[in-house]
Length: 460
Image (cartoon, rainbow, N blue to C red; front, side, top):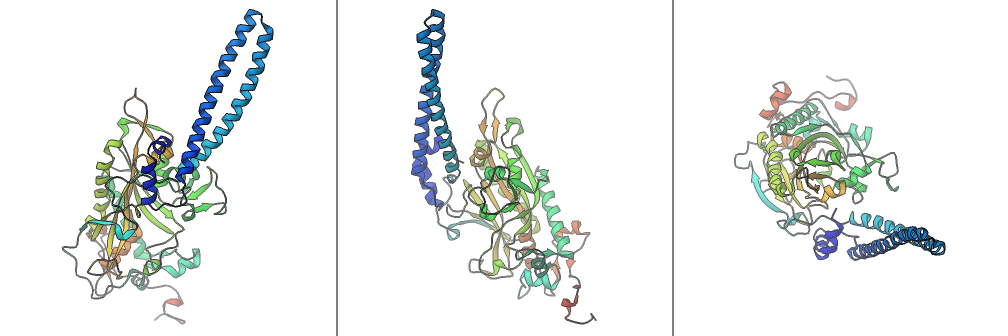
């Protein structure tokens, strides 16, 4: 969140951020009025408290001087001041609660380097990688959702039967390939000095607020044990939408030491999101689903180091694609498409050649976002109370948080299935993954199970 002092002293900067990020339903003028009224009440309370303290001292003097009448009068006045003070403090506490809730609705301030724009068409392509030496592809690349069903790697129909739309079974060699991807990603990031974390899957409302998922984006999250539209309490539980939530909140309310920084954690987890997807081919297959695996990279750093760390984090996430030799591009996200909580964000998009889309590369196919690499500056740290002490004798200050997927597993799987597809309908296993698959070089699929595989009757 933004500090109330920053909002008070830089209202036009905040107003500009609200407009440039396309945030609606926020009345900055009302927030400023609440803040002003709260400060007036605090000042009034301070005055009443000082006056009451002075009268309390007088009571003792009157009693020592034997002036009982003056002492009783002072006691009555002190009691009246106490009542007035309690009333003012109650009003001030109510206003402060309103102010804290309102500040949660304000977006982070975009860094000066972020391009201004309204949506994805205004994002700036920073560079592409891997397109100079593409492997030979079939004349017609079969989309992953058809190929996955042909080879019995993906089963969307049975996934929907068990859990509903947006869920799937990954089977046989497909499941083995996904496990290989996960272990490969974790090993790459261990080489980059990330420390592994296995986080809890349900997270409480305080944790969701700490990273910015609540209150703004509660409709995208799966709530445990309550109706979606009920008011939530701090200890209500949600299925984590990303491991960013539990890992960032590991140190919530704590003070780290300068010697601890930078902290680099990686966390593998399943992730759960209610998003319904978009119209078109992206709603098909293993691209936009309600449950998916991801390796998340979370960094805690000193404020002056966060933008250098952002560039390094981008390279660390992209290294997975570099080693797999999957073509990709990096986007510098514009203000209208970068998100509520970020100060600056890059997207890494892998190339999947199986479906032609209007915004795909010249050679066809489409882009799939596999990582958003973000610097939140102290926005999340203020919400979650994440601080560090520069020196043991100095006061604590808010640290900066960064994160990025390293990577989103299903979309990398999709890119492999389409980019490493062969003319005969098999899939070549990328060389770095073969040690994780017992040396297997080609995925040929398996025979399907049940009458539905061949229609009614016995298999040949």
